Structures are given as structure tokens and as C-alpha cells.
Length: 217
Image (tube, helix red, strand yellow):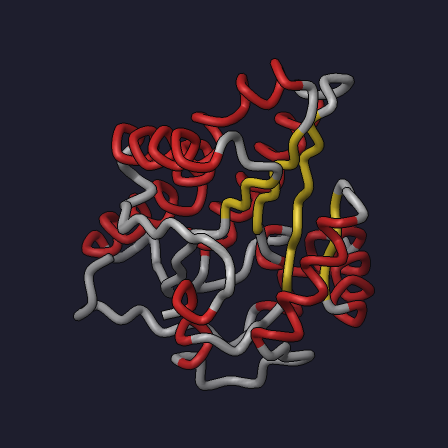
């Protein structure tokens, strides 16, 4: 376990981010032991290929939105007012390049990450001047079990340790918004400005993430 390899006190909680009561209880227990954290990172996320035309995918849509969006809200909620009262703190949300434009076959995931990006932007505005910073990180592909199921080319793939190091630097600098790696950041800027007809044409034959019907979220 990662906690056992670290030479610092750790607290580990097995919690479903969809459960706001359990998240509040875990946060309260942490604060009782260690005090208010300096940084809170909302990183829980799931992905699955989804199709609106398939009724059986409705539950996957719901789970992806609940985990990727409401899970982020539930992660931050116990800490925001306390950080505001203290006048300092950092909230970090992990979004995705997939939230910049809609990707075929990944409508639930793209929608959830677009919602996360917009939510974090709103939260940053709400906390402006409070001393609490909000950072949005939109990574590209990172080699994890989530990407291992993709049987198509994933450009600019990052290893976990390299991605974590880049994220740490972004958080330390209190950047508002960052895409990584830099190659994906350049691609992200291009994605934003492409006209809708051109985007539709480019993505018409794009590879799609497996639906994995036999594995409920």
C-alpha cells in the first residue's frame, strides 16, 4: 500500500465519493487528527464508452456523472467554508482534455469532464479574494487501468510518476488551469478553435472506448 511506503503519518479511508455523508465523516475524522489540510485534490474518476441509443447505458451515464462531477463537489464541500474562514488553502480538481470537446463514444465522460472544468471555474470565481486558490488540471492520456482497455493509439502517453510530478509543479505554482503534457496543451488550444463542422468531420471515424457492458460501475 502507498501509505505504508511513506515516512509520514497517513490516514486512509475507503469511501464512495457519491456518498456525501461518508465523505463528510472522513473529512471530519481527518481534520480531528491532523487539522485542516492545506491542499485538497479531487481525483476520483471513471470512464467508459457510452452510447445514448443504448438504453442499458443509462446507468453508466448516471454513474460517470455522479462520480466525476458530484464526487468532486462532495470532496471539496467539507473543506471550503473552513478554508475561507482561515483565509488560505488550495482546491485542485482533475478534469481531462476530453472535456474540451465532445468525443464520439465517450459522451458521458466528455460531458462529465466539461462539467468539471466549468464547475471549477465557477468555484474559483466564488472564492476569489478569499485566499483559497482553485486549480484545474486537464491531463491527456496517463498509463493506468483506465487507459489499458483502449485498443487504439493514445498520443503523448504519460507514465503515472511523470504525470504526478507535473501535477505537483502545477499545484505548487497555484496555476488556475493547466493541460499536460505540453504537446496535449497545444492540441487542446487547437481543439477549442476548430469550427464545429470540421470537428464533426475529424471525429466521424475516431476510435471509440470500449463499452464494457459486463462491468457495472
